[in-house]
Amino acid sequence: MTGIVHLVGCGPGGVEWVLPRARAVVASADVVFGPEDLQALFPESPAPRIGLPSRPETAAPLVRASLERGLDCAVLVRGDCGLHSLAKGLQARLPPGSCRRVPGLSSVQVACAAFGLDWERVRILSAHGRELEALSEADRTAPLLAVLGGGEGFSTLLDVLRTGLGIRRIHLASDLTLTGESLRSCDPQEPIPTGLSSRTVALLETISS
Ligand SMILES: C[S@@+](CC[C@H](N)C(=O)[O-])C[C@H]1O[C@@H](n2cnc3c(N)ncnc32)[C@H](O)[C@@H]1O
Image (cartoon, rainbow, N blue to C red):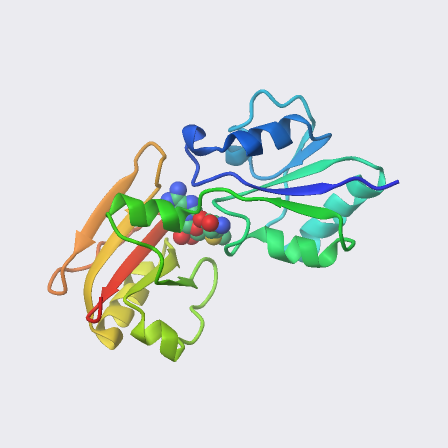
């Protein structure tokens, strides 16, 4: 007998941004995997809690072990499970049909809303814990680029993109929905702030936007 793995998007971090569906799924899980800050969003869940490594190849065997014991598992991920999350790598390493996704609000949606921007034509790039991938033509011509990242070197990366792409304005959303949320915008002549939180979405408005 095997259980089910729910890959649960928990939103950007604030407790009031957790969807009721996520709360119901976590409440009925036999075991809840995920980082401590996301676990804290579900104090009502009676299930045992287990931390997970961030790499799917080391996380998957832990989840699989519970699954093979017939346990229903909830794996908590930041934002939405369909955007640069552990969900993709886990799902690829677990038995076909064993995973169900529970969407959550993405930090990109919340960042766009905070600055009053539509996200229908946004191109999303990730510099979270890795080098930024090479930009495609579609990235270069998109009216709005969202870059996931933060921490050391992120400001420099944004500066390079700004110069290379002729960016009109950069909006920085850090620690969205959390205590200490910060929203800032930079015109081309202004320096990009350094020391950005590791949870930052940068929205780059191009000339064509
Ligand atoms: C591994 S990615 C996960 C993205 C997530 N699946 C989503 O839909 O938001 C981590 C990146 O998400 C962004 N992020 C997550 N939570 C955030 C928050 N509360 N405020 C700003 N950015 C956040 C940051 O860019 C961070 O580097």
